[in-house]
Amino acid sequence: MIILSSDDVLNLLKISDAIEVVSAAMVEVSNGHATMPLRSIMPLGDGNFMGMMPGAMREPNCFGIKLVSLFPENPKSGFSSHQGAVILFEAKYGAAIAMMNADLLTAIRTAAASGVATRLLAREDSSKLTIIGTGEQAQHHLDAMIAVRPITDVVIAGRNLEKAQRFVESAQQKYSEIFFSATTDFEASVQSADIICTVTATDDPILFGAWVKPGTHLNVVGSSIPSKREIDSELLIRSRLFVDYRTSTLAQAGEVIIAMEKGEIDADHIVAEIGEVISASTPGRLSSDEITLYRSLGVVAQDLATASFIVEQAKVQGIGTKVSL
Image 1 (tube, rainbow, N blue to C red):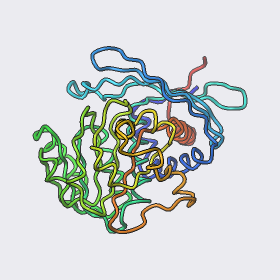
Image 2: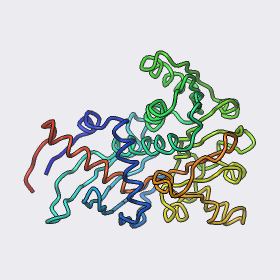
Image 3: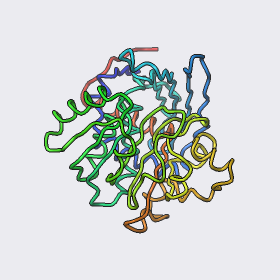
Image 4: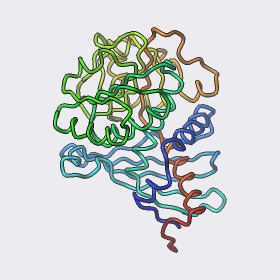
């Protein structure tokens, strides 16, 4: 078995590679070539949870499980909100072949999934980006959006202005050719945005339909807990909705569940899984003025495919610690 640390994952997984790996995985999901029981969530008290996500894939041919704790207050102490491990098994003999840090893998593959959706659904000339949220997901989403669209202007919006400004200062050093600004005014932050990413753990909507201009693409990443939602029903109704996996969306996406319970939409409001758009069985954006929305929950197929890629790269580069079980 190979043991891979967070630093190993960072060295082995570039966002450009992750976007391609996740894209291929989502086609497998929509073709029915992945087994993915709904994630089990165990409350731990004080707003903390443990999630368990088992799954199996045909290509790459593997199975495994992600075990992750969600501690939303961790960033205040300098820790990632997601802590855990991915354990990967090979399909021939059923042996465990790798274990790796899950928090960075999760952050990168989630941003990569938004990158896949943005590449398919955002207008090709989209240059103005707003990210609502200032944590780890915001950092990786910035990289993913820049990888797929010609971004020239970025607004970072957060409840804490000092934190948003620190984010901007760091991002400006990395992307000196892009203009960055920070704000606590969520409404003003999205007025001219071509792409909006919401990457918060909020319980109640922080983005509203009345604020978003026609032609915008949104990646709503948020939480996988049904009681939480980042956007209001008006924005959901105004948008052409794409998801990673219908089954999990209908069971765990708070925005969709609450709107359905109120009779504001039905299951047919979901246009397609993103894998169906990649394979061209369903069209993506139909016009320059429609609002497209990708509601991302994250599925274990993304973790397994990404973990498999990392293991292959580790073998080539001789990275990781080998142990015998």
